[in-house]
Image (cartoon, rainbow, N blue to C red; front, side, top):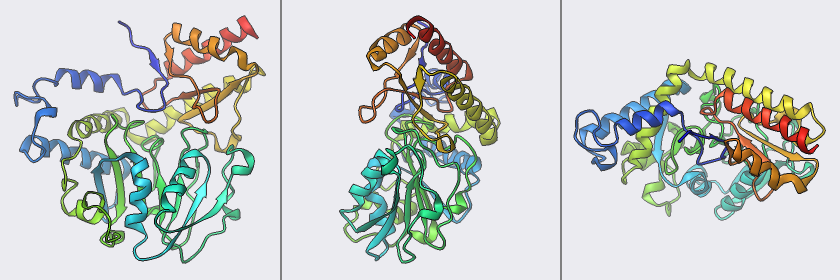
Length: 360
């Protein structure tokens, strides 16, 4: 059976060499006679896997020593509550930037714990833009400023790191982490689910500045207290062991490709190829403003929505799957994370052109 080009937004495609290595090691990891899924999380074998994965992530992102790297559970949706539990630190308010569905859900969850000010919003443009930094109405007394670095559903992405002064900047980087270099020092906290650019669902990455932990709300569950998890090396509870193992393989694969600068070049090329094809035709339309179009998630619509089902059917027949847009925005969406090769994007572009010739 040949593999398809999988454009799923998440869980998403993984690099084929990673899958092949995991398959080869499934029954016997490095002579232990057992699968990683069967290992004690406190045994020497898994502890070495865990330590290597953290070290590789630190290397790839150049994470400073004054930041914790935590491997947790719950996904970004859980972090929408866990972040205020940990980051309010006795304060009663925080600022959020609203750029789409995931920002909105973050805001709704955080409002259970504090007064949340929407310091800027792109709702008036249908979430097709990112509000210019100079329009943000930030509160210098806020506990933190929160943004979603890449809106997986709407397809808008920050191509800059905003200056928010002395207030810690918090970012949901679920869908664009490791797609390009990132200056961790500009953030107080980075978090994200792994199931897009890192590995299988079940693992959550948290990178947090050390001076910001240790002041969690008293009602924070122990497993969600960044300070306690940092003290326990992310093992206060049983971590998602197999997901951590796969993440480590992905980190190693990225390093072998040349690191994040190489990923940036590849991802830029893929995005330019796809957006260029969409721009060259009146048969397709990308609603997102050019200056904030995501390199990871590319939404587009057909001029004639009655052809949507046929487009998807013919795409699947051509080995191009998971192109249906999110129910919130409709249309199509191509997620082109690190693991998507340029050949996959070219195959999609060829389909776009061929479909337009037949039905345009």
